Length: 168
Image (cartoon, rainbow, N blue to C red; front, side, top):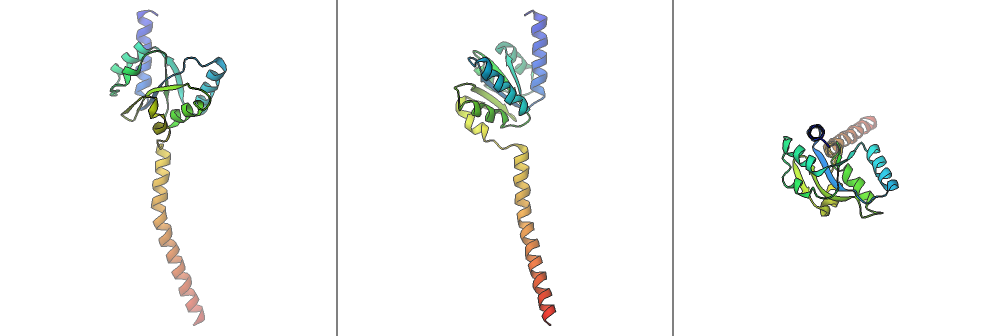
């Protein structure tokens, strides 16, 4: 790879990192062609971008980024692939699903909304993070519940008053 090609690759990675607040780094080495194809297909269906990267280029892209990746560059050893997504728990769920049949992908770390997670032991926590849509749905449900009780109580009261008026 020439200097110019490296420079272009770093710029592209920096732009990719700037476009998302959700980055998972995993080791997918050792997966056979069939499993790798299934992983890529699952990522595509979940709107997750999966890309194998050179560690040195990713470190430089992280340094050039406006985000603060903390100790995340320290996990960039061996083979690395990045998963980027709009939904915080989507890559975690994909990785966890594939781990039911294999020891890979092995989670190295993640950057999610300015929080840094290091190590494979974080996978369960990352897979259960609620997405923005799930949180909004829960909040709406909580807000609707008291309103529905008030409406129900008013309807019951109105029905009772009508029944009393009809008897009179």
